[in-house]
Every structure is written in structure tokens, then in C-alpha cells.
Image (cartoon, rainbow, N blue to C red; front, top):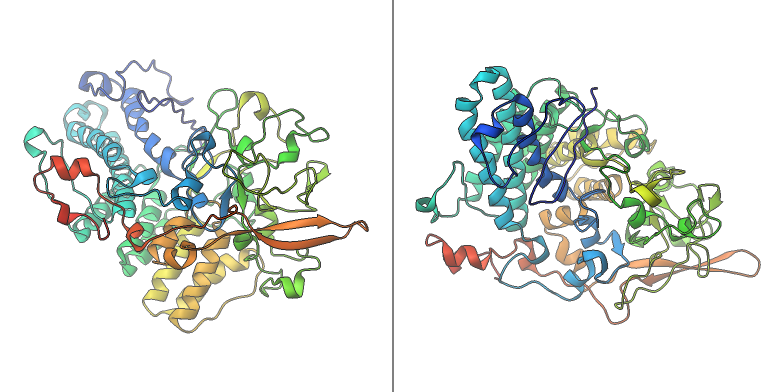
Length: 547
């Protein structure tokens, strides 16, 4: 596949380039749309289009979302603990440990104004493409319009995930169109579906890596259909995604190690010393920067730590559930493949040394506190998925591990859930077992909705751990109150004994006197007060329940 490198700068002036665009890209900053500049060459058209990809990069929720990983969605859930109280612009603990949401906006999830700014850019492009793009040929224009519609659908999908309702602006509105009523949820889902069907049919068949493909458009539609509870559509879209090339990588660990994994539906590529992020700083175990590590003296913040809630959910290799009673003497031996591909644990081999998360070890566990950042694990674990063993250069030049926006396993799990909700448990199990068979786990055979949904929830938690899905899944299932509210999450405090054995103890990783809050009103956050005040067709009564 032809290489494509997408480069992002500050949000106020976004540009993109690739090794296949040879022309000088001389266009206005992306906040000032110029018909003459944008449509002058095919390269300029692509630059403007690709500037809108920044919205996806900023919000996809895995490695590289921004330099500080401040949109790492799983850290709002029960499976990842941030060891930072509020350093690095990280709101993960303050958001739910301080109940920081109000009726003014969606708080840390607020995206209304930014989303509609991007939607306007999409609409300008779609308005002008048939007129000013004609000189580039119908095939070129049709594909780029379809790509832009996919981006627009992505933005509307995010609005629906956060607010559960929004305004449809499908044209370039002027001052006279300021006042516009909220659309019904069905109207928005219909709009998203139409854009993604267009994208799934009209994006050019072969796209460079890093560009939206037909398979990605159909995969995104399958995810949107789950939120809309349109089960037949979720299945159809998943089938179309597979028909256009969606496939599982036969080796789970390769998905995160190989940028060319066939499972990827959309990835962002980074280039060391040019386009980078700080994933190594935030994900690596603290001992990597210590004397004796491969990167002595490097800044390692070790911020994002898997919780015991996640780690204890990984099964044994034979498919039996892990339990401390049965397996606690040697808890990290004989676990399933995904555990070893995803988690760094006490005793794990790593870069020519052994991970030591015990109290006083090189990668030691410490208690979480609200006075700063711990700079080491507060759960006893580290996430392995987004760091490359043995890689150097990030210490000086920044990290270049690719970011996965969507992969085909997510689409398969969408399909599993849709079949289950339709009562077709035979096909639900067939699809679920595709995921399990890859990692050599025994098949599931649930025969009722409660059983199959429990299997699905477990599988999504483990299969997609750390990939930005868990928080949104809990909200979508309306499970977040039960899982998060008035709860503490946990880590494993390990003590090394004089005989070199270890003692394991489950402890809270939230700090003394701290407890999480998740209210029913958080399932749909507050509409911005500014929109209610400035739009005469929206009133306070239109806001979501509880706000």
C-alpha cells in the first residue's frame, strides 16, 4: 500500500502533507476558506480535505490524540487509571472524583462549538466541489466529496455520543439560519447513515494508508448503528466493511506492533523528529528511564495504568476465569494471549530486564495522591499496547508509534451485539468466537440475551482495552452508574518477601477519601448554555434530563 503521512499542526492552522503531493501547497490557513486557493490544484484540494482529519485525530481516543494524551477516553472508565491529578492538562481524575459537571456545558467532553466549526468547513467544501472541482474530473470530485461526507458523519456521530441530540446543518448557513431547532435522534441517525452510505460507495477503491477507505466508512456506520439501536443496519454495515477488505490479523499482538496489519481500518502515522507525540513518556514503565534501563535519564511519566478491574478480567489460557483464590499464588502465569500483548506486570520480561512493580522495585507501585503526578504506576501495571520494545530515539525526538482509529475486531464485535439484540444467538456466537479463536480461547455458546450480552461486554472490555471504547460502551449500555458511581477502582500492591516470593493485595488506586461519581444525567451531557441563549428555536426545556 502506498505510504501516506499525515502531519498536523496547531488547531488554528492545520495542514497536511504526504510524500505523493509534490506541488507547493500555498493555501490560506484552514480557518479562512478560499475557493481560489483550495480548488486550484488537486494537491490543494487534498490538503484542505486532510486538514479536517485533525478532528478525528484529536478525538479518536488512543495514542497520539495530542501531545499530552488529554483525550485518552479509557482513563475516564474503570479499566485505566491516570496517576496524574491534573498535570499535563489531564482531567481524568478531577472530572469524576470531583463531580465537576454542571448545566453550563459538557465539561471536559464539550465539543459543540468546535464540531459545528468543522461541519461548516465540510459544508463549504461540499457546496463548492461540483462547481470549482469540475476541472479535476468527476471521479476525483466524487471521491473527495464522499471522503468529506465521512468526516462530517464522524463529527455528527461524536455530537450524538456526547449530547444525544444536535442540530442538523447540512448547508453553509448564514446569519439568517442562526436559529434552528434540534433534530430528532432518528433524523440525525438517518443523516449520518446517508453520509456514510455515500462514503462507503463512492470513495475511490484504493486509498493510501492514513486515508479514509470504503471499509472504514462501513465500519463507522456499524458503530453508529449500535448507538441508534438499528441492529439490521449494524449487521449490513459490518458485512460491507468485510466485503471491502475488513479482516482480522491472525496474530493479536501484530495489530499493535505492525502499522501494516491488515486489521487496521484507519490509522494515523507519525514520524520521529517531525510529526510525533509523547506516548512513550505517558505509557512506558517508570523503570525505563532509570539507571539500568534502556533509556537512562529519559522523562518517563508512566501515567496510564491498567486497573485490577481490567487485568483480572483476562482469562486463563484454557478459558477459565482468573480468580485470586485459584490463581493468586502465581497470578501472571498461564494467562490468555491478549494479556501478554497488552499488560506489563511484575515479572514480565522487557527490554533485557524484568519489570518490578513491587513496593520498592524499579517500576514500583506508589499510592495515588491529589498533590501532583506519581511518575510511576499506582495500580501495579502498565499498558504495553502502544509502546515498542527496544525502540530508542523517542527520548530526544518524540514518539512515532501509530495511532489506531478503528480496526476490524471492533466491527466484528458490533455485529455480535446486533445479532444478540435481534435474538439470533447462533450467529452472535459464531461472530464472537472469531475473536476468541484468534487467541486460542474456547468458544462461547450463550443461548439467551443476558448471557450473550455478558460475554460481549467482557470481550469488548478485554479485546479493545486501552483503545478508547470502554467509557463510551458503559454509557451506551447505561452501565456507567453501576460500574463507576460511588465506586473505587483497584490496583495490586505487591510486597517482595525475604525469600523472594511475593505477597499480593488488592488496594484502591483512587486515593484516601476519594470516590467516583457518575450520575444518570451523564448519559447525555448538557447542551451549551450559549447555544440555548443564542438560538431562539432552542429553549431550556430542550436540554437533556438532569440539566
